[in-house]
Length: 118
Length: 107
Image 1 (cartoon, rainbow over the protein chains, first blue to last red):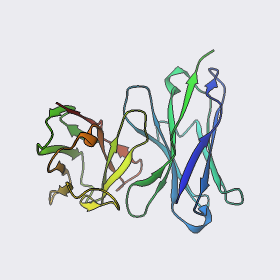
Image 2: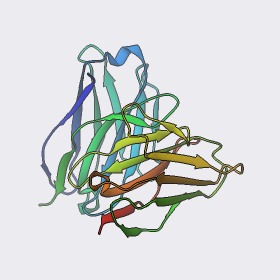
Image 3: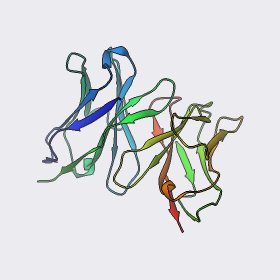
């Protein structure tokens, strides 16, 4: 059974860096698939942040591209999100997910609420 | 850009429910549908516009128009477990984009 679990600080100060890690179990990232980050501000819809292939190839949302880095560590079987600098508008639940090919995101983490506040 | 309608709908158990998703340009059949219950991650229901994801009940079905811009998700007989918000998502082009969501309430 494929499982994803986000981890990282739940509170980040404005202008600082949001860092989250998604640990994958039940499947080896190096075996394939795209792995992505999606966020959801409180009470709002879903926004795709970016995706990474096991080889390290990345795709980012144009609206976030200047502030986002997604990386993968196949040895630890996890991938990570870095967003900097952050503002209150980045307050959201952040989900990591596996994207089937072709197709949508078939496995998701439970989500991690990150609040940007001083 | 993906546009969903309606934004909210209220229906009774047993009703047939249809949600529409429109793409601003042709995305062929590269579309997925999700259900999200409050406080939970989305669940994949449909991919490639009309293919039911493993384990999804057969009361869910979906289709796309020949133009590749209009898509529908249908619940043939609404059940209490079907409440939540439904999202469409295109994966034809980057950036991947989601529709604004349709909130389904059970009367």
